[in-house]
Length: 392
Image 1 (tube, helix red, strand yellow):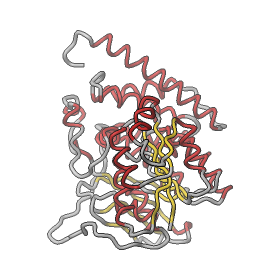
Image 2 (image 1 turned 45 degrees about the horizontal axis):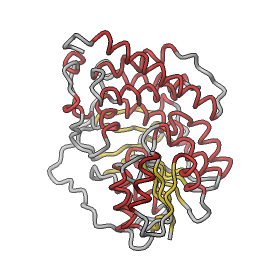
Image 3 (image 1 turned 30 degrees about the vertical axis):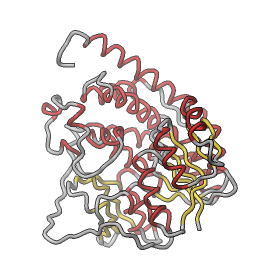
């Protein structure tokens, strides 16, 4: 039996991870659950899975949850210190990092330092600190198992000899605006952007998918996970979301992993690796299906090109791009900026950044803090300029 700490248990990936645990027939046990502030759902999860520890980032949520769980012998901990304690506990084997955003970096590094296996669902961790994370994992001989469907697909298609790989091909659904021109994208509303055609995800990743920033982050993640140069990473739009990604070898062979658009499958594979477990999840049916593939439109969706550029330049720039994007997407979700304004904000912050190449955790966090502050300043200026205009 594998014992888990699950970070981000109340989010989309966290909920689906618990569904995998429920169907794993005694193969998995939850030691700790961690989330931001969803007290109601955390109480439900705690009562169902009976962890030793639950952690909430929000101080008020901690007080409320302690009251709700006072009849159970469950420790309710708080903040980043509580999360670090939960991922370094000697009882656990694996940490599922499903927190949203750069906040996953510190607990991932702490878990690696403690020798834990990482089931990585938090791509921002490798975007912001990929060199640091991968070098730490190598030093500690820790496995990092991908949970993103695309990276899980690549992982499953890889042969032992990496020298034979010609390129990896990341597939992208294209989101709700596949085929739209940049002019038409100027009409996008929040409600339209949150309607993903294939996947059920949290709000932030759904917006990132629609702008293709999510695919850009995945390009950087793939570079670090599989030690592939950016020229060897290709993106193809695949609206059906059946082929989750592919690996092309030097002899021209292409291996692909197919499945339904269901995150429980890559989650389960990361948790069952190196074996496969049966489950009751719906199977893929290819009868009558047509699978299509298209080149991405870098002009209409410039976030993808921006991510390639940031990844190639490296240093602190990917962390800055990610931080600015988190702030800009949050502002869009609050209807403070327009859809196209997301890219403008991120682009402006990246262009203003003085890139540092020799990175440690402190320099990454400093760059992240700077980028968030600059993004907020750009948003404030946009709000002031657009306060009396209907087109903003």
